[in-house]
Image (cartoon, rainbow, N blue to C red; front, side):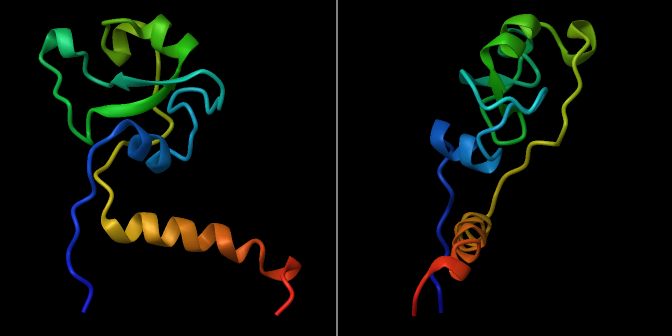
Length: 102
């Protein structure tokens, strides 16, 4: 049995979930966290409203909604399960198997 563990909402876990890519343009440089629905308009700090964004896209969006800023999400934010991160790390290890000597 594996004990249930809750995934903590943190900056690093949001980056991991989004694979260190901007949710608007897929850039991996100058990453920040953005509220999909702006906090100034009642947006919340939860998994479904927080995404990884590059500085340029985040600045362009500001406190506007996606429609007002003319931006489109490339993927939908979601609350990951503990198994999501376990599978992601396993998936990365498999890429190295051909280069390892057993």
